[in-house]
Length: 74
Image 1: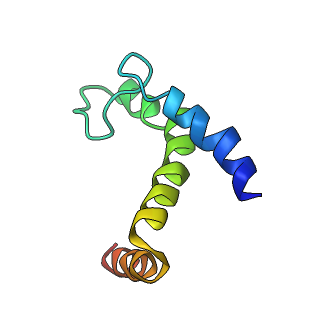
Image 2: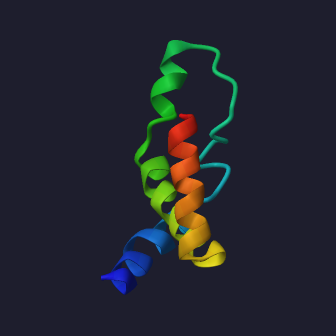
Image 3: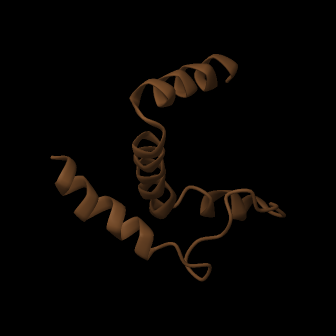
């Protein structure tokens, strides 16, 4: 299942990592219509890929502590 995720989701999200397709998540919003563009499928696709890469780089224990700390602060 993990291999399928990498092939279908992570590789596609990396393909979409193009300034012409995606804007910065921290971009300035000047109108209400720009808000909808922040919730595109590409961003929903990218988030799990980034989390998976962080988990792989940090290791299970540190990653889980970081997620718990983040959720407590939010």
